[in-house]
Structures are given as C-alpha cells and as structure tokens.
Amino acid sequence: MKKNDIEFFKELLLSRKEQVLKNIDGAAKEIRDMDISDARDDADLANLNISSFIGQALSVQQSKELFEIEYALGKIENGTYGICEMCEEEISIQRLKIKSHAKYCIICREIVEQTKNKRSL
Image (cartoon, rainbow, N blue to C red):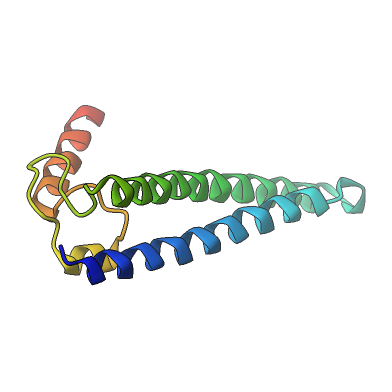
C-alpha cells in the first residue's frame, strides 16, 4: 500500500475514533441524565429502562468499534495495516474504504462468518 493511502486511512480512522468517543460520551451523559423520579407511571418507568438498556448496548458496540480502530491504528504504526490476518494478502482499498478497521480480506471474512455461524448452531 502506498504511503499516501496509509495517511488517508490513518486520518479516516482518527476521524472515526473522535466520532465514536463523542458517541460514547453522549450516551453516557444521556444515561446519567435519566431521572427515574420523572416517571409518572409504569409505562414511563418501562420507557426509561428500555432507553437505558439501548444506550448501554450502543455504548458496548461503540466501545468494541473503538478497540478495533485503536488496533488498526497500531497496525499502521507497525507497518501491517491493510494486510489480511488470515491469508496475509493485501485487503482491497475498496474494502478498507468501507470498513477502515477491517482485519480480513472479503474472502477470509466470509470464512470467519461461516465458521461463527456453524458454531452457533
């Protein structure tokens, strides 16, 4: 991969990292700001609980993405960014533009997904 491609993806990852951190902070603030004493009835309380649950689930997902972004940034630093962790071939630029923290090329990703699906059956 060319140096200017690496710089492009590094900036893309850093930008996404900033957005994810804002999302996590915003979700945490919303959860903190929920006031159970504002609930007037069981329906209000249920809505607060559902909103809290959804906010926490989104935070978990965003935290996972943040970890993957940090991992990809580390790969940029050690010179292995854009290399599939399974077949060790280059991941296509098109795939990285869609998912800049991809660990696998599209073929290996399909293998990983199929393996996961077989295990869950």
